[in-house]
Length: 359
Image 1 (cartoon, rainbow, N blue to C red):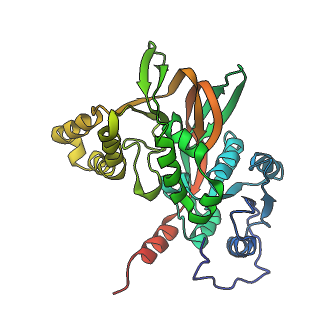
Image 2: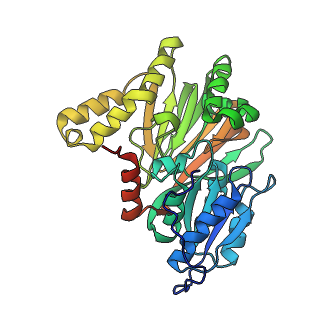
C-alpha cells in the first residue's frame, strides 16, 4: 500500500465533535503498521472521530474474534487491513450487526475491493473512506459444508465459493512463492493442478427445483464476477442484485480449456459491457448475451439458494481460501445483508485525478 501523497499535517488537538469510533483489524504480516497507523490517525483526527481502536490478527484467529471485540468496544466502522481471508473473517461478524465494514486492501487478491470497486493501491484514499465515505448495502453469502465424516461447518463469503480445479489450484499454491511474486504464484499452481484436472460428478438443486446430475471440472457460486489481472469469471454478477451467479465448467480437451480462458480474460468483459450498455437493452444485444451463455464449456445459472452433493470428496474454496474437502454444500444469499463503506465523490475524484496522465 502506498503512502498518501497529500498528507497535510493535522493538529493533534483537533476537537472530536462527533464521537464516532472506528476500529482497524490488521494482519501484521500484510501491513506496515507504522505507516498504516499514521495514515489512519491523520484522517481520524481530521474527521473529529474518537481514537481508533487497533486489533492484530493471529494464525489461530484471522479476524473474527477481533471483530467481536471491536463490536463490544462500540466501533461504528470496522476496517479490515489484510487479504481476502481477513476481510471474510471480519465480514462474517460485522454481518447482521449495526456496524459498517471498511476495506484497507493489503493482500494478493483483494477480490471484494476489485468488485465494489475500492482503491487498492492508495492507502490515503482507503483510509479517507473510513471516515468520509458512503455506506452501501451489498449481498452476503452463507455456505454450509458437509465433510466426509459427516461433520458440518458454516462460513460466510463475499466473492465466491466453489470446488474443482480452482479449489485444487488454491490448495496447491506454494505460500512461499506467493509471498515473493503475489498472484503469479497461482499460475504455477494452475499448471500443476491441470495435470490432475479430473472431472467430478454431482447432483444439484437450485431454488427448490428438482435435482439434476452433472459432470464437470469446476463449480463456482459467485456474488461477484471479477478476479485478478482483469479476468471476469461471471459477467452477469452484481454485488447487490440479490442472487448468486453460478458457473459450471465442463470443457472437452485442450480446446475447451482454451475457450474458457478466452472467455474469462477477454470475452466476458465485453459481454458485461454490452449488457450494461444501451445495446444490451435491444433485442440484438439480448441475443448476443444469450447466445454467449449457451456455449458448451461453460454453463451459467442464477438463483438464491444452491445445493450440491458430490459422488466423492473434493477440495472446496471460499473467497480464495482453501477449506479442505467436502462431500456437499448449500449456499444461500442474504440480499443487502452487509453494509460496506465505499468511496464518496471526493475519493472518486482523487482516484480519477491520479489515473489521468498530465499533459
